[in-house]
Structures are given as structure tokens and as C-alpha cells.
View 1: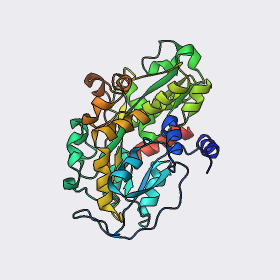
View 2: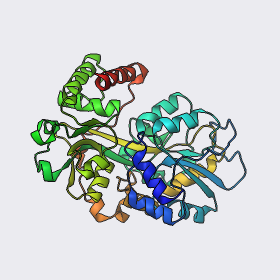
View 3: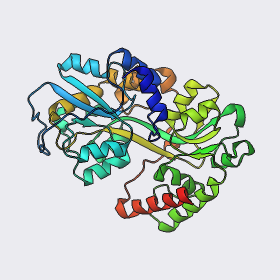
View 4: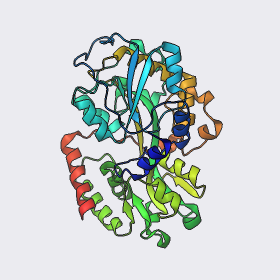
Length: 380
């Protein structure tokens, strides 16, 4: 698949979410190094079983099948692992958590490593789709920041190791809105009418209503969720779009204000220096994408070796420098670009992080209430 076809597909695919338009620098570097970074290829065939116990390779071959988000890797992450271990990596990409979940749930995907977001990990664990990690095979696990070793989504990294993380806030045009964007009241600005966006994801979108009303974005209170939906229905009248594809509308000037994931905002800023990003005074959310080993991984031992490789300080730093996301690897910080490391929007202060909780797993019943509320917003 040619580079131009890949780029066209990225822009045209309406199922894209926060990562599909990210990390163009990494994309071209990957292409230059001969790695596959295009649409999903047929998943390699694997064998069933193999969950629990010490990680072993059920298939005796130096291979690793890795399934990751599009353009979400450093140019030498794979090549350095291959050089260090002799393990050949087959690298495929997906466009959404749902797409990846369907492949893994099929039971015959044959992938050894996948990268779900934190809110999907709980679903994977409940559904028995991922195996418990063998910590003895990941000595570099101690390099993680404490925040990611004790996170609610997976305390003690029992099933996952973080790949990269970011925040949810507001991206906007400084040319049009100046320095007036400090919180969700920016959607009321005259210049933003019909030119604002909200993410098309239930928990993220409804968090605007919950935070604006002074509620916990992880609330399980049905009345508060309903009130947030009503708030969003009112806000919807002022919007131009409800979509997770924010980069092109922002960089082109079609939209001047958008709820956005930090990585999207920084990618838009790279393309258009007039784009800025801020954490709303009301707060926002943190998210993290995670390395997990599917229960039926044919090369589980090699998957653990790759996880440990990524946790090396130099490898973790190269990943962060390429994708422009925060690194969960404390030992990598001395090697991360100072401009990136010192950016408070990439690495918020402890005070700001206190207003940016991870999305909690509220259970199927409560999650269904969020889904129903979001459907009302979309269709109302």
C-alpha cells in the first residue's frame, strides 16, 4: 500500500478516533524503515488455549504478532527489539478499540500483544480475553511511575503495562478565540457558535456536562448522568459537530474549538501553530493505552520480552519523543526531549492531575446508563 493511499484512507475513514491522525512524523519514519503501518491485514492464525501460568511460547518460533493503533510507535521500537532478541515482529494496525476487541474475541486472531485503552481493559479482563502477566519476565517493570503501577484500571499491573498516556481538554484557535478559552464557557463565545466540537465518545462527551455541573466524571448517579445529557443537548445547539476526528477541522479552520485528546491537539498544533490546548478549569480526564497479552497468544514469552524491552529507559524515551504523548516510564525521563518533558500540557503538575482522573469501570449496568444517555444526546 503506497504512502499516499495510506494517508488518504486515514483522512477518509469515518470510524477514526483520537489516534488515527496522530504522529505523522512517526508515520513517515516508520514507512522509511520498511515497517507496515497501513490498514488492517488478515490476522495471523494462532492456536487456542494457553491462559494462566508462566508465559511460554506455545509455538516454537522466534516470532511476535503485534496489533497496535495506527502511527503509534517510534521508528526503531521494533527494529531495536528484533536486533536485541532475534524475534521477528509482524506489525498490524487497528482503528478503534471495538475493531480490536472483535478480532481478539474471535479466539483465532493469533496476536501476542494488543494495545487497548484503559476503559476497555476492564471489559477484556471480565471477558477473559487477556492473560495475567508473568512479572518475573518483566524486570524493567520497576521503571514505571507509581501513578501507573497503582492505577485503578489495573492495580499492580496484573494484566497490563502502559504504552503511552494523555489527557482530555479543549483545543482551540488562538487566532479566532485569543486567550479566552479557560473552560467550557468557551462554547458560548460568539465566534465559536456553530464552529465547536465535542468528542463522539459517551464517557468523554458526557464528562463535559458532569464537570460543568460540578459532578464527578466517574459518577454512577443516574440523575447526574441524566442532567449531564440535558446539558449536552443544550450545548449541542451551539456546536458544529460531534466527532472524534478533530485534527483536520481544527487545522483547516473549519472548527475553532474542540473537546480533544491531548495528542490530537499537539498534532494539530504541529500542522497549524495557531492551535492551542488547555485543561478546562472544571477539569478533564486522563487516559492510557496498555500493552496486554491475549489469552490465546501463541508467543506469550516473546510478548513479555517485548514489554520489557519497551520499558527500557532509552526505548521508552524514543517512543515518547516520536508519538508526542506522555511516557509512563519514570526511568525514561532523562532521555525525553526537554521541550516535551517541560510542557505542562503533556506532563501536567500534580495539582492539575488531581483534576484529571482516569475513567473508572462502573460496571455494565452503569455503563449502559451512560450509553443510553449518549444516544439521547446524539439523536435528540
